Length: 305
Image 1 (cartoon, one colour):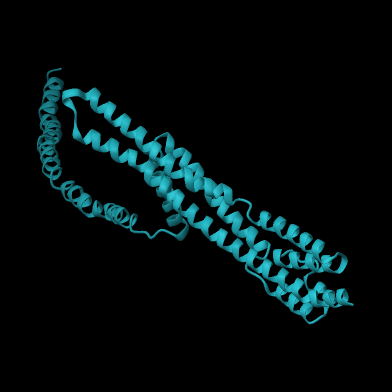
Image 2 (cartoon, one colour):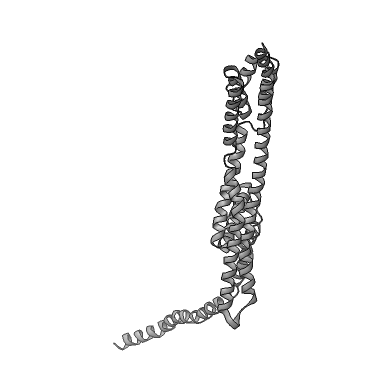
């Protein structure tokens, strides 16, 4: 037993250094490894991300920002098309006209209606005079010349069925001369001439009325505007502003200017149309006189016999 105990103790003392060596080997590297691992990332973290994070914003930021200012600068500089320019001009004119109507008061609306009527009358009258041949006298003149040569059939064929006022009167005179005595033929020719001349003068009375009342409406609007301006000045009392009175006066004067702007074209067109009709009347009288003078010698010869 003693020997066995001694042998066991000897074995324990021999194996103790061998068992302590691995434990020491496991403990000795464990201490420096956490120190190196703790220090290495701590030194690498501020340096490694710093270079990419600072470089990327500076390199990528100008790329998307460059086109935006360029687009903002070029957008207003794009030229407008012809249709867009016309549309913009029409919108501006409509806005100015609406402001003008608002500033002018009630009278300006009546003057605006008269301006539309005047324009329609002038255009219609020009079309009507052109339709009745107010500026064409060739056919009627050739018919009269043919009758003076004694060719009644040719003269009647030239003007028959035409819508010109001169041709109609000449055709009526030729027909009356062929079918009626001279005195009755004259009466028939005068009747037809008055009928067509009266039709040609249709619308001139309306133009004359517009040329007369448009300035009066303008003066009425001016008087009403002045009354309103002085009433506002009286209500202001001691705090009256001269600019308030001046603004009311120039707004009131707008109606006078508008009335004159309508009356002047109406009066000019009326004078022109009257001159055209006067020339038509003169041509008709000349043609009728030539026809009856050319037909008179034959009738006088028959009467003498």
